[in-house]
Length: 362
Image (cartoon, rainbow, N blue to C red):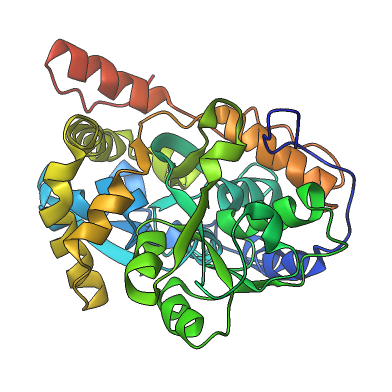
């Protein structure tokens, strides 16, 4: 942490071996395969695919996906091609599905996207747009003894999945800012299980994306300790980006443009009147989780999120440095080809001119 209390890099650590193991599981998906990644959905002779497969989470920070799917706007945009969807708990599992050719486009955090890029030697993933910034909170059980970030040392802290964006941030904070010798007190726990575990005293705190942080406040009586954005320079970091398989991006730019047109439309609505989208978000999440989240929790959650179409490349640079500092990477990766906003820029230009262009990107 620098003099302003911002998260920065630190000295090298080696307590990240479990993350090595989890991410090493991606490698077999990239090697020893006779068929290119995602070839199952690639039609012959450049024809349109039978379906576009979209992956995302039931999170407020994936609001464009939730609303674009629930409203039917994504499906309408690409019709007659069929839209199919798959829901994930956290980024590493979505990346596995992307590598296995089970999805074409997804909403995911920067850390899994960066790890996927490194593991595939720059061949397996492209970031094509931003979706949300900030929207991560640190909350604690009322009787945990945690009243500040310094009190997290040695406490049992839940994150959604080993190697996801919150998991990386929590481990970095504990080992490089609080100077713990390791991060063994970070416990990967699926979002939906954290409230019950907190109520039973099995976890002390959670490093949680929204609406799960607000949910823990509402359902487990958790108290807000901090928002992660407060430890970042300029109080901003990208939390959710839109990613695609490079093959799908190059072969079907028209479909990508149509999806991003809907995506940017929802971003604009979320920026201008976020609270107006609460009922629709509540309905969309109920469809996916079979549980109605209290509207007040969604209102609290959405107020902590900044919706943006920009992928904020600086966040990836920071996570790459963290990975190097923690011993996760042997060298700083070249991120030149990670982000491709060519189609996004065309869509934004069309939005400004009031026309819809879905042709192939140059």
